[in-house]
Length: 299
Image (tube, rainbow, N blue to C red; front, side, top):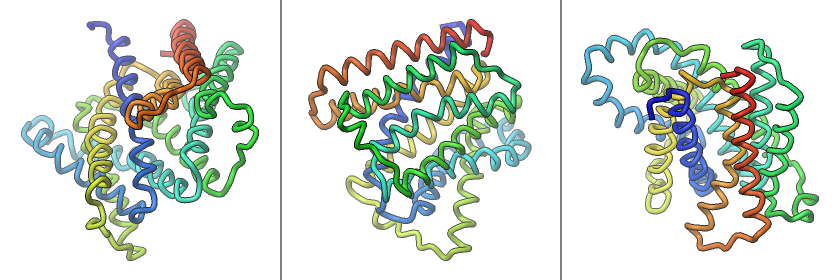
């Protein structure tokens, strides 16, 4: 795969699959310990694991200091999203957050108008709408009654705020990207996230309670650390060099499909024909959206 753009799409597709698993892991961890403590654990252990791979190279070490400031900015959005997600899941459900998350690509596209002077064509608006509908079909299992019973609560408002942070993370990831290697920027983001979380814990005197993270909880946090912190951050850094935020965030539409398939496999749950129908539609619409964005030269 020598085409950089195709490589970028592969990276984001793989990251999307990994993020799908994180929704399950985060829901299992919600309420266990304070969200700030959990995110500190996640970022700090990730930084420790990554440190030898970064520090072994003199060239990488020289890039760390110049990238720390930008890493701190990016980590404030990235860590903030996960903190608010955990807080939201204490009073809402994965179903509600999944439905709201479908608005993130459109939110990113709208914000890109101000940061990159992008324009959203009528075709893009139409595809965003169809993609959101098909994704909600997966989330609500094709049930109109379940859709009509959907209602917002305080946790949903918290999660809606977190969506802005993820949109800003995607946008600033593009604008703050320099010539440093992706692994160095990932390391800087992890250090920045650890710093912000530690400051908050110290100011509000929040106990760590890391001793509670054991058994099945330890497995969930291990998945978040390795797969959706270290690996996903690296994949996003690589993809951002060739793809714009709208294209990257548009893959959000297949997140619920990934979650549904993972739940089906891991929990031995049979998906109905309606759910499979909307899974196929959401995947097809996502591919169509990629085609339109590239054709309109929004790479």
